[in-house]
Each structure stands twice: as C-alpha cells, then as structure tokens.
Image (cartoon, rainbow, N blue to C red):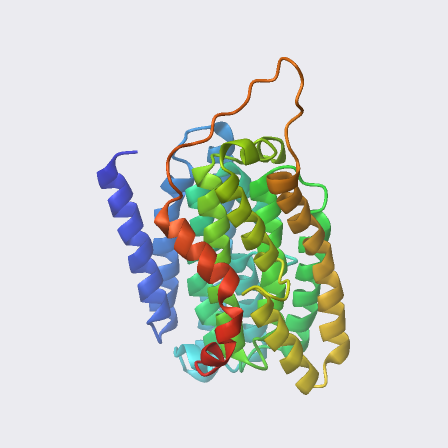
Length: 346
C-alpha cells in the first residue's frame, strides 16, 4: 500500500471518529461510523491474503448490519417522539435495538463471534486500530445513551462477555485471537458499569486502550503472532520481553499495576449499587482471562527454546527499544500510585 493511500485511510479514520464523537444528531453519528468502516476495510485487506479478504468481508457485513440497526432504532425513536437528538432516546423498543447495534459494533457478547476472526486475519497494526480506535465511536454513543438503556440487560450481556471472553481464550495459540477474547472480556467490565457510572466506563476504555496499544506495538516490534514464536523471543529481546510480561500482568488487572485501577473502582461502584453478586461473579470470571495472560507471560519470559546440539543461538537485536513502547509500558504499569489524581477527572 502506498504512503498516500495510507494517509488517506488514516485521515478518514480520524475524521469518522471525530464526526461521531462530536455529533448530537443520529444521522451525523451514523455517517461518522460509516466513514470509519469504509476507511478500515482496505487496511484489513491490504495483504491480499485469502484470510485477510475473509476478515474484511466479515467485518463489512457485521458493521453494515450494526449500522442499519442503529439507523433503524434512531428512526423508530424519531417516529414516536419527534427527536433526532442522541441523548433523547426514550422509546423502549428503540433502546433495545440500539443496545443490540452497539453490542454488534463493539463485539460484546452475544454479538462477539466476528471479532476474533477479523483480528486473526488483520496485520498487528490494523488489529490494534480495531481493538482501540474503532471501538471509541460506539463507546461514546453507549456513554451518551446510557441513561436510556436497560441496566439488567447490560449486566447480563456484560457477565456473558466476561465468561465467553475468558473461556474461549483458554485454548488459543494465536496471539491475536487471545487479545480479541481479552477485548471481549474487558468490554464486559465496561458494559456492566455504564448505566451506574458512565465515566468509569470511559476511564476503563482509555486505560484498556493504553495497555493494549503497548502489547500490540511490542508484538509488532518483535514480529510475533503465535505462542510458538513468542517462546523464542527472550534470547533475541530480553528487555522487550520483560516489558511485555509487566504489561500483560497489568492487562490482567493484577494489583500493583495500572490495570487494577478500573477493576477496583468498578467493583466498588457495583457494591455501592447493591450489586455485590454481580461484582463477585464478574471478578471470578475474570480469573479465566488471567490464566491466558499468565500463559502469554510465561511463554514470553520463562520458556526458553530447547538447547540441543544443533540448535542455533538467536542473535540479540542491537537496536534499542523504541521510545514510544518504553513510555507506553511505563504508563501501562505505573499509574496506580497517582490514582487519586485520575479519580479527580472521573
């Protein structure tokens, strides 16, 4: 792909995202989502591999269906209430259809089946965009319409997402698929709290995007997409592998790291809302995803390739660690001490 084409598609992505997150009218929000979808498709299919073409086709079909449902819910609400404003969604059937449309856009269970397949067929940089930037516009729509949505339905979908994201990621060997199921699991944490404390959902999304960006950029630097090749990276890039270990533990939400902050706040808020059983269930289900994060961390740092007589030692890469990855890793692992400062923005 030529640099000019890349520039056009990237600027279209930024334009589509900006239009959606800054709009108050359903039509402009829908138009921004469509621009986003059309701009990411060439980036998914740029390798011309059959798997990439398949991923682009699956992505187009699901996003087109979700956009049609979103437009249908907006039209139904406008038909009954005369309002095209995003925050004035009051008709119950329109709210239900919108919940389905946004769940399909985000990859929230039970509309999650397309996401691991699409991520597996995409290059690592495009997979990063799909996991973070492409989820920002539907996440803002979920944030804006959260007072109108059904909290019970969102709670059930969230618990299902966390369960399926953890359970289906257990036997995967492809890292992109593992990160896709990780994303589905994290979306469960965001969806369960959106009706009670929407700003916590956005905080969780920002921190998730930060940590996931670190993981994807590290994997892109060491050119790894399977567990079997991840096992050989320690001999080549020990520093990057160590960074990957810390970032994965943060993504799992273990206490001294940044990833623990949103989970802690969400459990606290759910307990305040007398939803201790839901908080307990979602916490226990996140232990499933902890298993595959630990598996990734184990493969990256503890497993060494077998030292047989005919084994050739991998050379260390003499290039220094990219500064962007160093900065991202620091923020992905060390923001917990400044959590009072972060809480002032929530």
